[in-house]
Every structure is written in C-alpha cells, then in structure tokens.
Image (cartoon, rainbow, N blue to C red):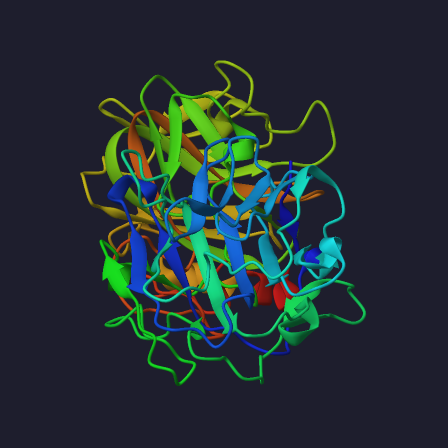
Length: 465
C-alpha cells in the first residue's frame, strides 16, 4: 500500500504554491472555448495530478465532441483524439493515492514516423506499453486544438454522469504549436532520483494557457499572458489547495480500506461510512518528530488517532479486514473514540472515559510527539484532561491521552467511522480554516499550533520526520 515516509521526502527547488481540489460529488469543473490555433496539428499537455477515488472513470480533459483524456475504471490512462484518429490505453495502472503524477501528452500529426505522432510521458518517462495503440493519420488536424472547440477540465461534457475528476490538479499547461518532452516542465532531483517540477520558460502559442490556481477569487485565470481564462463551475476559494507536487500533504488513504461502504471525498480529506466501523490510515507516516492536525466532526460515531503501519505481523494496524475498522482495536493503535453517548480513549480494544462529547462541526485537535511517544487530543481550542499548550510544548507527558508509546516503527494518523463522517485537516483543510500555521508557515488550522509541532507535509517530513 503506497504511503510517504520521512526518508522519501524532497525539500527545496522550484516551488508550486497551489493546486485545485476537485470533488466529484459537487460536479466541479472548468471550461472555455478555444479560438483559432497557432497550429491545429501540434500541441502539448503538461499537468500534475493527485488521485482521489479509484476504479472509476474520471476525466482530466474533454474536447470537441468525444475527444477524451481520462483515467478509466481499470486505473489506466486513456487518450483519444476524435479528429486525428489516435487512441491509446496504457498497460500500466496508476493507483498511488499518496503521490503526485506528472503527465505529458505531446501530439504532432505531421511526424513521418507514426509512433512519434503522440507521445505520452509519466514522471519524465515515455510510456511504451499499451493495451491499445492506434496512431493518428499523418497531417490530420486535431480535435484538441481547433477553432470554436468547447474544452472541459475535470469532466466529460456529454453527460449524463459527467465522469467528474475526484482529486487534485496542479501546474496545468497547454502549449499550442509545439510538441515538447517533459524536460521543459520537470527534472530529476539529485540525489533522490525523484521527478520534480521546474518552471516552463517557453512560448505558449495562441490557444496556450497556464493554470496555476493562485488566485482564490478567480481560480480559472490564465497565467500565460494570453488571457485564455476558464469559467469556474461549482469550485470555490475553499477548493484552492496548498497540497502540491512540491509540498505533498497527508490525506486519508482509500487503499487501506476498499470497503464500498466507506467513501472518500474532498480530496481524500473526508471519510464517510454507511455501516458500522470502517477505518482508514493516512498517506504519510512518521517515526520521529512532533506533529499536529485537526479533525472536524460531521456526524455519527468515530475514532481518530494513530496506528502503527510497520512490518511486524502481530503489531501492524490492519483496517482492510472485516470488522477491524478502528485502529484502537490493536496493541499499536491509539485513538480518541466517540461511541454513542460515550467519549473515550481506546487502545488494544480497551477503552475508558476521556474528554467530552463532540457536537456537529466541532474542531478536534491532535498533537503527537513521536520523540517521547505521547499523544494529546482536544476540542475547540481546549485540550482534554486539563492539558495545557505549555505542557505539550515542553515535551512532558503530563495529561497526555496516551504516553509511553513505543515508537519503533512508522505510525500514521488514523480514522474510524460508523454511520457518519469526519473531515481531516493535516494543514490543507476541506473547509475554511482559521489561518493558523506551523512554525515553518505551512498549514491553515482553526487553532494555534503548539510551538515545535508541524503539519504533515513532505517539506516538514524532509526536515523533521
């Protein structure tokens, strides 16, 4: 199951400030109509995505009638140019919900060699294995770059279903009149070997655009200088995200529990169960450092805290099996628990009274000190058990919900759900935050972050995890 550990994090280099979080349940998308192109046979797409749900057709782009670019229900890339005639479906699947993928499609139907007319790249490497590969006819015009073309981002326009994108998009380029390779948009980090973004410095052509989602009041603004702005549909300022290819934030992880009764929405920051006790761990895990996050209570019963996801078969929290839907059931799971009228803490399936009952829209705080093996929980700005911000910051275990936790492997935030929902804020909330950041300036929290504690993102993992 893919997740991100501190040792796998990169810090520094070119910085991308924002992405756009699409939620399929609210039918989010962008659209515009193209003008007369520089060259309707040659163009390049370049963009980054972070996936939400899996095994469902979700569109990046739809243009000119039935032209399609999406991830299908097999989690494979599918690309089709209706006019030029090219059709491609990858053999490779893309199921890592913890990762940002860089995708480039570069088309030039004037190429004499048929295999060079469409090139698809993922994370800097050209895709060479296809279940379907039908190359365009030479010199055919493209449906993707034609005058008066209706163009959609995040949906398939001839509904009924719409096939809306669920997840994040960032650093989106369309280059009219050039077939470019990924080196124009990214590079390999040294010494990690990870593919990372870099600034594009070339020209755009007439229909070219650059969507960086930097203006929360105008999310569809084109930053190329062409003024090729997009109309925004059902997206608001809350959907502007700081989860980006250069600072990847923690989310819940659908791969930790694929039960159909547990739904993950809002960029995998909201979990909703329609049955009893289903759970998830998160996409980032730590073995050291001090970490802070918040949870917004929506409805039903719940649990949240931390669970060990190491390699020991007798100590690993496993939420994918039936009836194992809360981390606190395990010796290495530590959670705050709401069960009916009870407000409890739970570990190794043993619970005791703790805290006060949460009401709808309450914000619950979590402080986890992996260096001393202690975790605290609070509600609406007040820590439970009379713990104080000063005690938490001082590194004592006074009034902790749990202390003496043996941190001999990686632990990840957990979530447990019974006929209800929680929203998570690891620094990148799916609701309006209060503007509080950690000491590095990351995050958007409702309450002040204890000094020395950090939001769960890869830049902080690189420095503190």
